[in-house]
Image 1 (cartoon, one colour):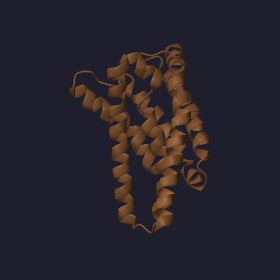
Image 2: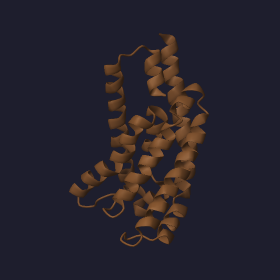
Image 3: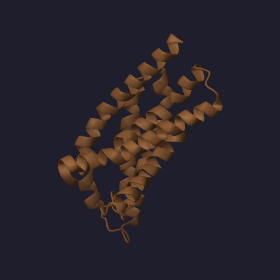
Image 4: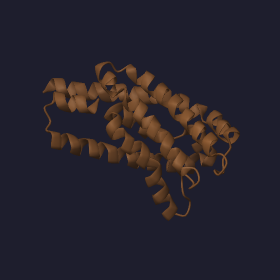
Length: 194
């Protein structure tokens, strides 16, 4: 979506890259900060239920498209792990990190596939989020099933966590499209004013 708007505004390729890099960095920062806020307010169960890191990743997919959002999805848990490890309480925990990188990358890529459609019609954001959620969670569960012999997780344990995260998924399914539609309206309004 953002790329389409920048093209509409005749932004140079160099400035497009700069803009998308800044937006990506901001979303990664938000993906690190939101879980900290939720964990402070609601504890670890709040994080499992609300899945706060997923929000910026999904917004990144809808806004940036797959090529740029893949970075947001892959780096968000890595940056979070690196920063929170320095504070003595790594989030996500090291055994979960590769699975979250994989899952959030899928979230970003799948929602990003809808970016151009969202630019054309904002309501596509609802389909983008639901498709990303289903794909990402399925990939996470499949990865755990494949790696079960050496990973400290079982499919049953992850399935229970997926069920516990349903409130967060429902909030994302509403909030991310509303944010995406709002951003689309603002970006397109600014483009029409020029």
